[in-house]
Length: 271
Ligand code: AMP
Image 1 (cartoon, rainbow, N blue to C red):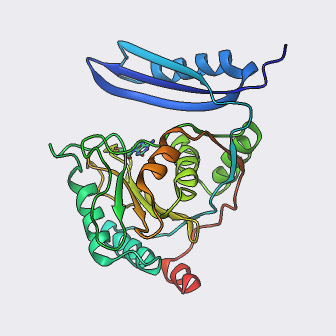
Image 2 (image 1 turned 180 degrees about the vertical axis):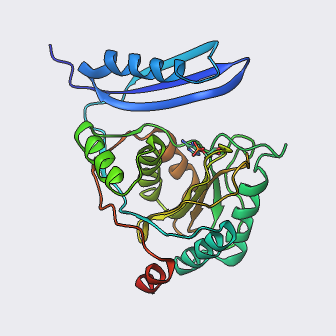
């Protein structure tokens, strides 16, 4: 009998107990073997060789939820401090309070866990007060069980490459941001990486799309993270966490990848 199920495949690799690589996919039954070996290949390709690789394979039923990806635009700002001012303007347009924006930037710049380390997952923040709502402030909330459909994944990588965005991180972050933006009660997300060599970051929402900044943090900084701003009137935090962590989502329609814009014209378009 043909297996009609889709499977979530999640890989995690570590060395001496420290995380070095992780990735996940959602694929149809006949692609599970190939995908497992691709993910193991990815873990082993890291400069620091893992001493432990775990792969979890789990059925997510016959029909994952299908979502359209956010449209993408890069705003050409070459200074981190100026990029963060533009991010502040965009979030203000979305009715995120100044105090919440300042709190989010503080936690992402300094490490949001009580130890001052980065969290493995995201902060969930009340957009009107800046109050942190994630139940576990050491780990945060990790969005999981999302992927591009095979055809649209190929298409989006081509569209992104046409705009000079060929880093594998961009298509993966876009899938994650698209899932988060569709979360119940979510207003916007702010992200920059904890990889010291990767300075790009983004602000994303259903209204603005995925707005990317090449320099949202200083080169060499190991501090990064994600903040999900929620509307306290409509967000039910347990439902949002359930959606982010467990609901299987396939991004089954690529959005538009716009040429880079200057921030002034982008903000004028929002107003
Ligand atoms: P990265 O873009 O992979 O460098 O991740 C930057 C930060 O975003 C990490 O340090 C985590 O705090 C957070 N993060 C990474 N992946 C996820 C995820 N799947 N869900 C929520 N937060 C994440």
